[in-house]
Length: 162
Image (spheres, rainbow, N blue to C red):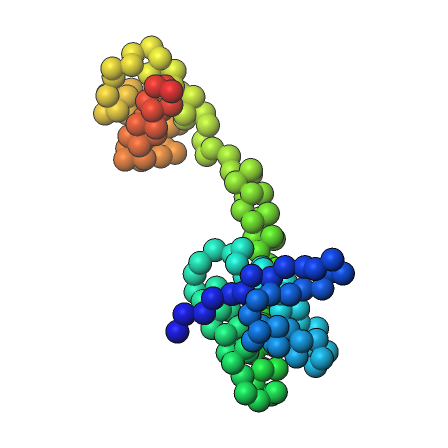
């Protein structure tokens, strides 16, 4: 089943309207039952979110609410949409904000090891990581293993090319 959301617009008085009579009836029924669900605003929000499982579920429930033959069935779907819409609207900005905060707080681990590697590569850019590992001071070899050290040398080389 493919469900297409109607194209909602506002008239001069600020009321919502669309060319889909079924959507207009659902919007009016939602207002009359005083459940607090705004069908046009929900539809506009739904068109703005990324495709995925959540959007598919919202679309399915929205289609079922519009096709509901009983008042109770319509209310069940509208209640689901309203609760999950409110949850999504509240949750998404905090998740995005937390991702930005986390990204801003990431600091390099053991910057002194990176500084030592950078200095060695500046002095001799062609030197390979096994040779650097054998010359590395004990405070470096005690902190990280040879595999991790080799990866840090590779990253340092890439940093130096930029």
